[in-house]
Length: 482
Image 1: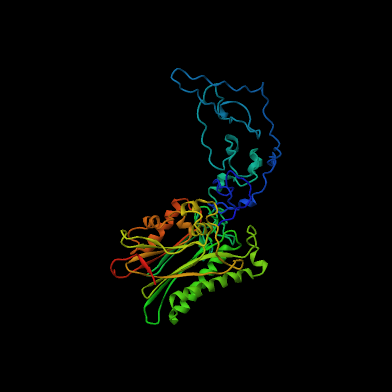
Image 2: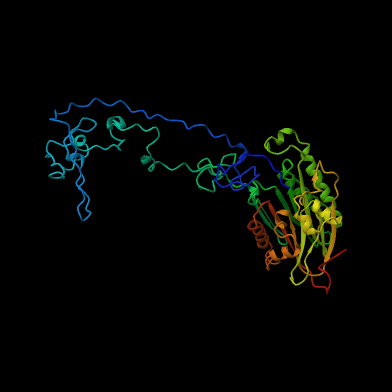
């Protein structure tokens, strides 16, 4: 359900230097806006280095002739290098006009070391300026100008090593996950290292006593456009009812992330209101889908200013798909619009598995009409074009609901196509489910999301797991329609 956009072909993302995939509008690793990459400048600016005016040199002693530096001796047969000639070994003056050899230091013999090492000079002594020159000393009087060195346009990096660490973020401020010290600004970037911070919806997990759900952005999308809601309530007779709603935003529509969040929240609230009143779960599911549709339709009526943050999407009506499941009174109720699915995996893996929903998609229509078999239809590039969704521009809302009464314990899997693309058949989905999923549904949901990410993670991935516990009632199919 993604929409392709024309964008500049970039070999690497400017933010993280990872190669972007063809057609990606945002970097799948760091979220960098690839459409906003500026044109490369024709040339790099040149910065001139200005040499400060030299101080007047002190008059030097008249020299008999130009100073000739002695040639270094060749290494002998033992590969011992030639002796090092120090500046003080040769008569002359430094750049400030000071003699290289003090009055008490005998002249060196050309090619040899000094006759005796110079006496150490105490700091602040009168000979301090005459014996040794340190061009890296910026703390002394005169600074760079007195030393004759170039003035630095930026702080000396050697001094920066001892600079004070950046101030810690204020209490309560978000701290960067990369450098662990910088404050995160309102745009979601670290003010210290510039690293983009993960958003709250990039990865979400929730676990209740009888249901668990996990949603992840995936590896290719710059944001998570899926959403879910899980909850539990009680029927009038006091028996429990467990709810799981999963929604997938239509990427080619505007604000798909808001559409999925609004639909999941509205459907969940409708079920929590109707089930305790004694409404039949199948009727309650139908009403919940209608409520979700109205919530998504309301987004299209908001003023244009609410959509200014999403300039890279066509400004058509927000849209999403929805799939949900209710466990109540020994029944399993499923409802859906779109191509998200519900699977049934029995605890006894020798029993048959089943897919409990039919996609509102081009491929499903081709199979239903007998024009293609399932393998041919889903191999077509039009396979995932949906024919039903929630949104103001939907042709007609047709909620699908079904009721089942499983005769054995099993696992109900409610997921988006970001998961079932990597485990399409019921058998493939069952093979991806961990053996302990009945006892650890959150761990199993994490494993299923990991299965999709390992397979490529081309889409957002969301899955909710509901362990269905019943006593075996004899032989029969995995689930019987009521």
